[in-house]
Each structure stands twice: as structure tokens, then as C-alpha cells.
Amino acid sequence: LGSGLTTFQLHPSGHPINPELFFVLEQTKGSSTTHLLHKEESKVLKNEKLNRKLVFDLVNEILVEKLASVEATTNPLMKSYAKVTKKAVSAQQLLKELCSAIETQQKQATKRSENFLLEEEDDFLKSILAEDVTIRSGNWADFSGEMSGLVLDVERLVFKDLVNEIVHAETSRLQAKSGRRRTLFADQ
Image 1 (tube, rainbow, N blue to C red):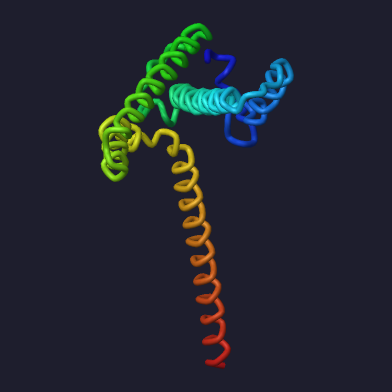
Image 2 (image 1 turned 30 degrees about the vertical axis):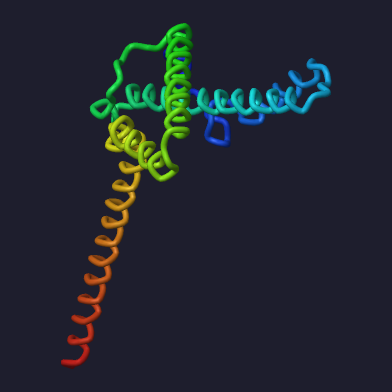
């Protein structure tokens, strides 16, 4: 994510990797596997496919976060809001971070599924919400991604106010001139 990827364009879906790529890769994987006769084996394959899809989506989400943090460090308007270091991320470092994030997510998912077996559904949902609030709440207050949109909104509002002020001033000036002319003609 060094200088070359700071101008990286997201796929129109908003992801760095085209989501359709997963299905293309799955088709090539599916064509290389033999047809299975047992329902249990097909169920296992389906679960493996779902797991691969989750990992694929997770990688896409992590890359979006990484690209946003790189943009935040390179965009002069967002430098003060960036919480990441300014050094460029190498491909090897990015791969390590991706693997680490995937392992962390898988451990959390395993822990959640174990808790789900032990708890009632309401308690399980509450524990997920509590985890979101305690662990991920730091991102809730990080609005560096919205900073450029906010700046554009403020610029538009200022520009609109200036135009309105000029139009109203000119309108008032023209009305005042026409009012003086009427009084001049009325006196004669």
C-alpha cells in the first residue's frame, strides 16, 4: 500500500476485489473436484464453500479499512485525524496483517459458537452487542473517512450562502434605485 496504491480505484461495488471473483474461483475449484455421492460429503463441501466466502468477504473488508487508513494519511485534510502510522505498508506486511486479522476473526467466531451452545439466544445476542460496543467502539468515533464529504458539504453551504448574499444585495440595490426613480418622477 505504498505510493502506488494510494491512487487505487475500488470496484464499482465499493470493494477492492470484485465480489464476482469468488464465484469464478469457486467454479474453477468445482470443476476440478470429483462428483460426490454422499450427502454428508456434499454438506461438508458446502460448509467449506461458505467458510471460503466468509474469508473472501473478510479480506475485502480489511482491505477497504487499510485503503481508507492509507488515504487518511496521504490526504492533507485528514492527516490530523489519522490514527495509523505514516509509513507505507509493504505487500508482505499487508499479507501478515490480513492473516492475523483472519485468525483473530476465526478465533472470535469459534468462541461465539461455543458460547451460543452454552447460552440462550437472547444472551448470545447481548454478548455479541457487548463485544461490538467494547471492542469495536473505537471505530465509531473515527470519522476520518467522512471528513472529505464533510468538507465538501461545508464548501457547498458557504458557496450557496455567498451566492444568496450577493443576489439579495443586488436585488435590494436595484429595488432601492427603482424606488428613488419613482420618487423623482412622482415629484414632477
